[in-house]
Length: 398
Image (tube, rainbow, N blue to C red):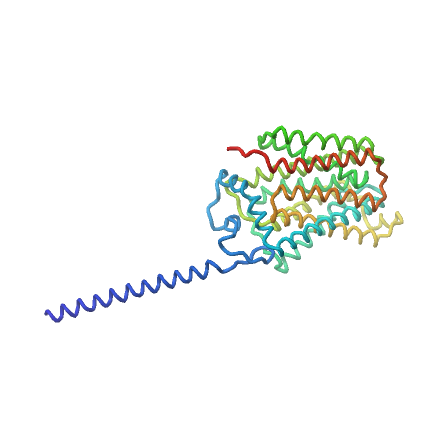
């Protein structure tokens, strides 16, 4: 009996030692695996390799609980710094960002040139048709991107579509009014009027979001409004339809931007990257533009009608296609740049882009411009730059 008890105790000790040894090995193995997994880079947008610990929380939002509105607001305050760090990841990252900004500017310049040439030669103003064509071209590029798996297809819910639909409507109507303005006045004047966007941003943010601007921000609106007024009074190609169309485009675009904070910044924010968000907005905008095009211009616009006017149909379609390509390209690049830098940096770059577009259009179309007109345009653009810098240094609410 004593030998049996000793044998039983010995076997139990051996089993306990084996279990503890196995546990230690398992823990060590898991620890080693965890250490290996912690440094494995993950591929995200742009095929850049980013370690797991440096990924933003938005990329993990599919597997984590939705943030509260307060946490989202706190994250928004930290976003500019994190975006700037991501954008400045060494010389390669800086060069890539610089190339994207240059391409953004060039595509915007060529879009305005080709689009203006098409709008000038048309016998009738067809802003709805031109808008639908541009959005259709972008939609084809998007479907090709999804079909060839160059970018993953988004999984949309009915709730997401309901949130994005108003943004798409504003995007589509803003494009319609921009084309309407470009068909009536010079490209430089349209972009001078569109430089008054900060005025509508402040107004709409106060109305919809309850954001009260600081006195300095309000002061920066004075040169913007005064410069646009001065440029309008001395503009050779001034036209009331062109002026109010550009103003309507400002109102719609800024309403879209302000409402996007209200509609997409809730407690149950769902993940969607910048490219897919822009893609969904473009496709929905095209679908919304079709009924307007058919109702307003569909009866009169046809290849037979264009041929009866003596226009070169082939050349017209080529320029319209190039305008559509540039339109889709520069807007997609704008979204991609915004994902890499802070909103204030993007706003400053957009201000510089407007200067480049105005100067290039004046040189290409040889638009007559007086010194007073140039002064008004310069004052408006300087006000936009000042507004951007003041928004960056605004006091944070406690």
